[in-house]
Image (cartoon, rainbow, N blue to C red; front, side, top):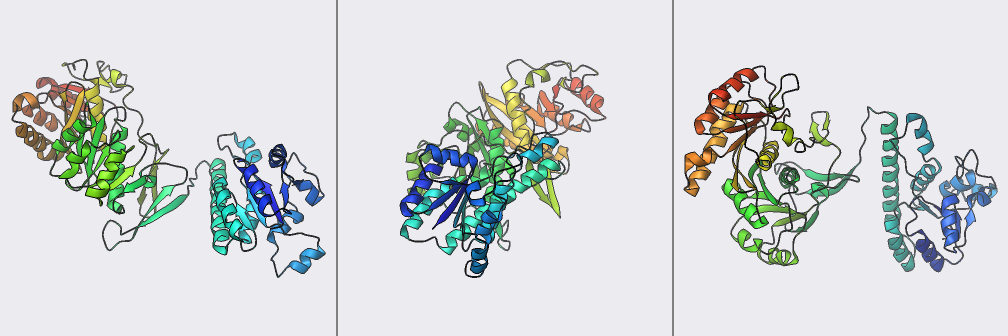
Length: 524
């Protein structure tokens, strides 16, 4: 290696990398652009400037620095083919490009965007990628040490050069996409990184892969700490459980998901207690499920999971003792470590020939106090719509009910309760039905009755303590009638039906408290 060109915005590790190269190649000539040259100067690393190579000054406010045949020609000329022409033009080869772009701020005003665009760096990266068989291109400081180790053993392999070129052109593509989106606000560009091929897709006759959005964290890029490889369905259900827990992130909670449906959801004084109450919500459906925890899973769960079959556990962390136990006793159990505060700017869903994109649901819980005020005509349909008022101190239960109903497939109905002071449990849920009445009468109510009967408690009393939440408005009064006949006294719903008055009148006639949240929670 005779010549290298350094032009980086991210200067992490650049001094050590340059020193490592000079140790391996004492006669290496390092060419550096302005800011990078200053960093090398500070480290006492010998180098020459771009203008010393081009014999042409930087100009036009720094817009033109490396755009010169002495630079681009030194990168692009084909070794063994263009050597004679290069000698005639006095162009010397450049063997290594170390480059990353200066940051592009898409939030600037349109007239200021142009000055944020990197030109020279982009040109050098593309040139090096085009000629990767002869020129190595490094854009990520994490590769510095790897390259030095390989160079210490000899030269860079063609496979390494190709890998570096792919990484560089991906960086360039993401940068160009960001510029395109900034100039055209109606466009949407994102880069998917292929994490791994799955054993199959939704069914065995389908192929499947999992991709991650570049720069985003979440279930797709979670650390897999143990167990068999995850399946397509595992990833889908894990995402549903992840979203459910995010809605109660500040609580000590557990969410259980099976085939896209929330079948267990609870909070507790301890994570173990929350797990037990979540499992009790629908233990039959929880068989072979995904279980997500809001806190670290410790060795107290070894006994809890010993005789239970679950596919995946998802948590912010797992204790070393629990990891050791699963490795020995449940080697197939998949363990996913993921931060619950990982937030995506948008949610995406593929459709035939395209993609649907939407922003995440807004924070619904900061305005709970407003829900408890009387409904005032002309101020929007938010507040207590009935004569009967809710008791104070139930805000946590209402929060939990809204979190639960968002995690059930539409048309969604959930029945929740406060099983101990300040701790909550999903006791019955219905969703995925063409109509809301079936979700309530055929699914949520029978499941709640089944669960309460198992406890052997006063059924009528316990039913009267439940809160019903709906993800959409009630178009007719029939669901209110059914809820009242069961003994339910509090209903949360968005409101907004043309028959709201009819529904309110039925609630008043039945002495129910009904709260309009003004927000719909569909989860198709």
